[in-house]
Length: 55
Image 1: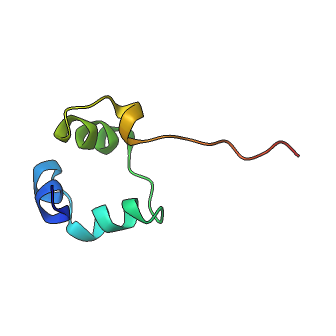
Image 2: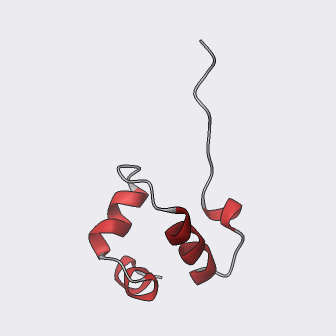
């Protein structure tokens, strides 16, 4: 799926999708679920979180 098609499907700009892919923007939880739904996959297959190392 192209960035443009995904952006249109979830109602954001293509630049927003580019920023999410580049890890320069964290989507809202709602947008993250919409993106996962667009790919028909669980959210944890699309997004992950790696906590910072303990200091």
